[in-house]
Image (cartoon, rainbow, N blue to C red; front, side):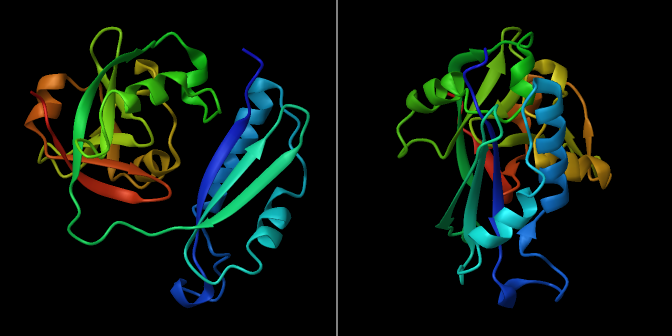
Length: 217
């Protein structure tokens, strides 16, 4: 239970893509840092005081859209990796398959973004990349929870997206938190029948909301 790290995956935008000159370039930085701080405090990790400064140094030479992966060890060591990132083309619709692998709603670590990803990796291996862009995991009761790298959102026509509660066994995603706080989404337990009816979106802080289609044989 102690052999894992905390992870944040951020989107960095170069100066020419920013909305204002005051932007840091890191999209949703405040929410990422709030989650990292909360996770470190609750799980007993040492969090350095200079995380945002080190993030800034890491992207100092970046001139294109980038994926920034921050990894924190329990003793406070921080590793930051920066790689180019290509967003989804407009009009992209992800094909989503359902995994046989199940999440345990009683596992408290599922709500934190960590390197402990056995269930997600197993779910992803169930489907070749040519047959699924994302794989949806259910919990032991059959409740839809989340994708392997995304949060799940259902548009039932009410004007507000619905997303499963943390108690189902899923990550407190940064995009999910942002949409809930902005009153664009609300927490509600979903059924598989409702998800099958759609329309669906899968999303995370790096990619934003992506329209999705459940392929359920």
